[in-house]
Length: 348
Length: 111
Ligand SMILES: [Cu+2]
Image (cartoon, rainbow over all chains, first blue to last red; front, side):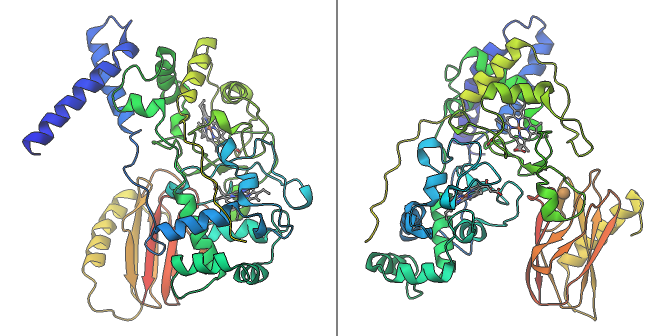
């Protein structure tokens, strides 16, 4: 480390020191306080935001691809009725969800699961609640063709887009010499989706050293989240997910991940969702069964169904009223005030 | 599937690492060993030849799973200490994932 590096590191430590003064106030035992402080520093280190968005080698970022992907994402002509776009369900005004317990697709038919957000999926390993798609590229064509969602035969879609001059130009810019194909539709949409990242939240500013960025209650809630309530055992890292599957004991009988893997592994287990902008994403869970964060916290405290498949991480928590309040105050600090998204002008 | 003792497995780890680093002459159908520990495979990519087998050894304290979507292969639950052996009989690139911990993945390139 050069001298500059050393100075920077020293400064960072000083800044962090002030962040935790509040969490530690009230502890009169000096050595305990030191241990607490060290532990908190360790905890917080796990929540640093990444510096850049990862794009896969076989579908690198380009402006042209992302702009095309955005057009496709917002274009209802991708559905057989020409009425439903990806954004009908993944609506940026609701943190890229639809604010309904269960999604509604073609002919207003109800879907079996709640619409998840597409925020921060560039960092996800597998997609859908049950992880059945291995990449965003693989995922993108699913809803277009799915009878219950957009019900659009893909070969016809390629013809339809080919008949729109503006799309021909946009595909040429994004995929020179390749024309319009199912693969290119998927790659463009996936590229756009990877750019959908939640902005800095109050929590991020706190992690970066602004001790005033979140309230004392939220700071206590952060500790509850990591310790007593065990939330971070599954909702880990800056995007608050371990990208794994767990049965958290919701009453739904959806087989979840077990159906994908076959056999009895991970029955009723679903992908751990990230928790960024969670306030704006109600209602919650794969079945949309919980309406508020307060219901969510009560579920984890002692409201879950006990069954063989239940995750070992799920235990009665015995949270006090104050701890619940603090936990919710903390979850609220994960919301970013993202600028409203500019809607694309679609070619006609 | 035999249940092997942990210490024995540690020994295999050394062999495995050397084996991967030092691939030179591909003899008839080789076996390659990949360890699973701390929710990670011991290699990120593995280059093998058509007909080779790979033995995935769960050296971890938790259950894992071996899923290779492209080959429609799924091991079911892999208990700690257990092996899963897979033969790669086609060339291409294969993504091997633990179906329980999807971050745990490995690319197998079959030449
Ligand atoms: Cu695993």
